Image (cartoon, rainbow, N blue to C red; front, side, top):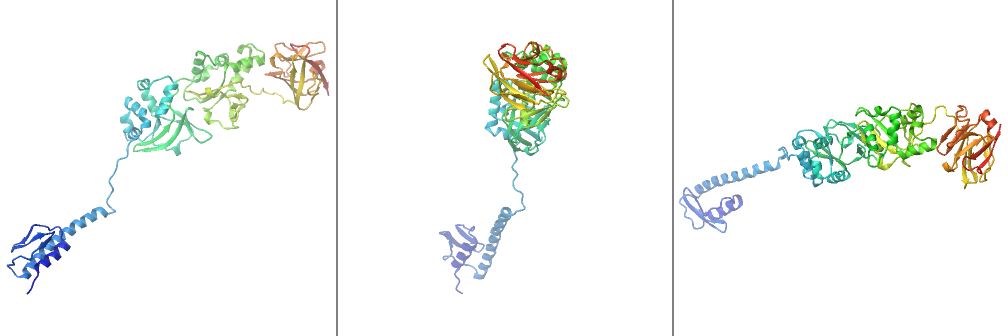
Length: 500
């Protein structure tokens, strides 16, 4: 039988088992062949057995090699292709690790390390951290004249950092206006401005929310949040002792009305004080023609002060256009005018807003707020008087009913209807104070320092409010009144004509 052993080896080894690659191939019967160019050449072999024996042994060895190779491939395929095997778990960084990986939080991380809070904020939590950036820290340090070393060595550092930390995981979607309990056991207060931005304590804005960590969340803020340490009364009193004193008249008014104690409580109180500046009080004294706070009746002073206080902690971001704010004066409200940054007609002072106290917040204003007087009658007519030097008054505008005069005429006759209530707006100001006299020149009502004989008449209800003079023309007053004139410059005068 003619048998080509070389061809048999080439077919099996090349096609099925490239792993069998030895210099000499042999079996128990002797040498089979040698390696030539990666294949086995057995053309010179001497066979000592019959071909079918050799084929049987060869087949057995090839089967074993084939099974081994298929086993490896099968095992590899099962490992790499199975969808049931879990993927490797990559640990999520905790809050400290997230902050440490961001160079914008390097000052915060240093502060956390110095305060010994790394272990706490790396723990299971969960925590929500309101994290100031480096720029936020630098702004805070510059505003307060501090260095980074001053901050790191501050004995309040741990408290300040814990004040930025809220127990629990609070996503941005769950943040609402109002008090928030912190890990420092001191609340901070969230406001939502008209644009929907979140603010804390009136001076810190949340710029990014929901930075995820394994043990909670980070919300990024643009300033360092500090807890208040003084109440409203203490802040106002400290201001009176500053290099440039302020609120001296407000503190004097509170003292005279025995109201200082009402502003000395803690976080359980929530008050907003619209605080008139000293200049605002001085303007009031001039308008009322008084020397100071001691010349204002106690009842009136108390009502005016109560009218400046809202029983809620309202930061500037909480105010809304056209809103009515209740006050401590029963039944009286303040009106918000955001377009002109005013409360009623008094301007808010942007540089002195959101002075945060333990018991509320202070906003400085440039005019004293005066509540409507109880039972004050509505005005029927209004006339505006300008002056022509020191020689004449001129009527420039008339509104309402019951009052008539020629406009733009020097010292015109002014006709008033009996029983009406009228306001004279004197744009001549304190240089040309207005009064009203009888035919003999006796003063009945006076805007300036003089005292008229009808000023205490309750029915006349005479009121001076800045450059406005208001009175009711009763029958008794109508029998006497004859002339309006300037108290200082006698040439500025005209007739009052009463009609029924």
